[in-house]
Image 1: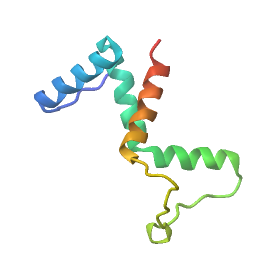
Image 2: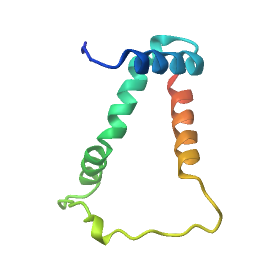
Image 3: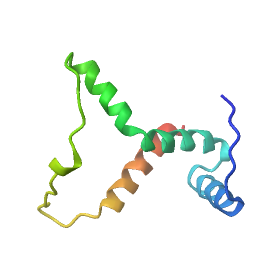
Length: 94
């Protein structure tokens, strides 16, 4: 599908340069944007996936019932997510 977007020129240029640096080609732009959209709407994908595993309707847990946990060692969430995305990008680019 072809889509037109209105994005800040400087932001778009920086995004393209980042993808070019990481992938070596700008052909990966579409794949990266698709991954970003999926990340944005991941809740929908998770609920649909869980429903295929279970025949019972699944309702999201209210935020008030979610409590933080502590890890046994210091962890940077940003670093973990960055590593996960880098692995996913590396796997999707031949």
